[in-house]
Image (cartoon, rainbow, N blue to C red):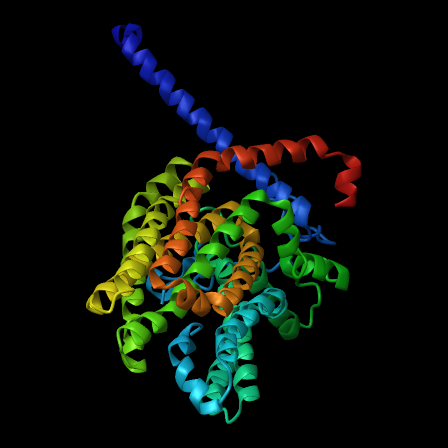
Length: 472
């Protein structure tokens, strides 16, 4: 043993292990500080102290007998303990139908483009209601109610007899359809505890049982931590409706991701609007045949999702190594691959689809890398947001949905004219060049993301003080 200790190589390896452990410890402490600063800044998610407490038994944690919580770590009602199988169980559709709709309703091409844009306007308005609604009424009622109404308004589009009805039902369809997208981050954080998530959903679920106990026993002292939050109009608005916008302007990471994903989202909608121009206008396909061209997008997104599973196969090891808090940048390899794939797909579509002599299936195959890139980019960055903001993931998702839907709603209004006036190949080249400009973004986030967060933490620490804390 003494000989081993005197071995320089052994001492160097031991020093490396100690340094790695120290880096991990510092990263975990930084994550904890960031969570505390988020609570301090965006507020009202940390419960108030209970009014009555029981006597403290030496060696045991202080606990209020009236506080309702899960029945131990293995409670089967806790969403984090559900089986994996149980937990994992539109908008561009009218683009290929626009000519038939114009002939049937006798409106202009610009009105036809509004069908997609209005759906995305609903995506802009919806998050302002469904985020706060899920906190007030729970996620399940919002899911059931919004998806039921979404289905009804889709039927309303099919049965519409005039232009006004078609446009209104289209707007309302988007308004209700966005609810699952808005709440997805919160749902994932509630159900999966890989990196210490699930606080808000756990508190809310406990509040349901607290209400039941109060009714059954007649004892009004039972409560859940969720109910100890401030519930005045001002506190509620600050915690729900205003928080996404506050985070958007105060979090550089969130703002940059929203801009990146918004442009990617707009590019995708531009390509959706270009499909009829390419396949119907240049290759002579029918409406139904053009609709079949979107199958490649579905195949691509499926392949992207499967490939992402391969990319994160070592994540359980990372979680154990980093004690539950791996760096969010470990989510970005998918976007690093998806960015170049998107550019390849755009140029492939534009320069093969522009010539009628090229068989239709050649540009159609380009939709596979496009779909795959969309899946990889969105999965990477949405999980990046969840890992970065944890209990505030729903607010980050709401901000992201509002920004990207605003851009997505604008693109269909000029895409068709661009492809017709610039010709398909050069219009696709323009969009492809935008994709090239965006391509380095995941790499930049991977390299500079930790430094940006550290600077934000240092700025918060330097500005923190009794007056600021009291104001918060």
